[in-house]
Amino acid sequence: MKPLELMEEIKVSVTSDPDIVAARTRGRAMALQLGLRPTAATLVATAISELARNILMYARQGEIRIALIEHGERRGLVIVAHDEGPGIADVERAMEDGFSTSGRLGLGLPGVRRLMDEFEIRSALGDGTTVRVKKWNG
Amino acid sequence: MQVPILKQGAFLVAVIQSALTDADIVQLRDAIVSKVGHFRSRGVIIDVTALDVMDSFATGTLQDIAHMVRLRGAETVIVGIQPDVAFAMVHMGLTLEGVTTKLDLEEGLDHLERARPATSDR
Image (cartoon, rainbow over the protein chains, first blue to last red):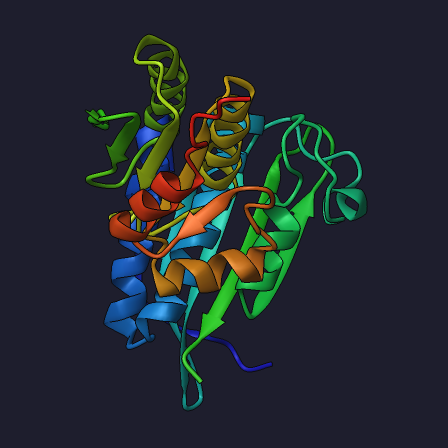
């Protein structure tokens, strides 16, 4: 795969409840700036909301970076949610519908995967979690 | 941002005005459940027209409100879910199972008025 040309990036640190709203509001604005339809921008904003909440809930703090990217003719948005929290012991299990260690609906990560075009997760116990998702405009 | 909860006859109406933090939603839940008892309300309408995102937490908490209100003997109707929000919810697998939804405030009130049990002589 060809390298993606980085066009613009913003960073939102996630340390408290209102940061979830801030992150998804900025993500929606960038999605619209990219030319995504409002429906797709809503999917992006919803995914960011879930990712930011996971950071708060499991790691207490972390950051979300949102960048516009280009790949050939296509333009897109990449969102990276990163924390240095306890990490996920069983990533495969965390991706199963209905699985949650927080006692709530376990739809967070599998839901995010369904909202976005590409989804990658890297996590290890004691070594934090990084989730990288993308949405393309075509 | 607190959500105003207005008493409208036998019903309570909460109109969400802007994006809510998780803490705001939890506060809304507690306020509604308490006010249902205080005003002896038969029904609750929550208008979510202004919400541009309904994620798993918002959806889960709205569902909790509906179930808690039901346990208190009243009915909840969620109104105003926007088309893009509905699209995202379906993608996420968030269905608001067991919760009554209506198009808008008018339809919600109409539903509650019809559903309101007529005083029976039996």
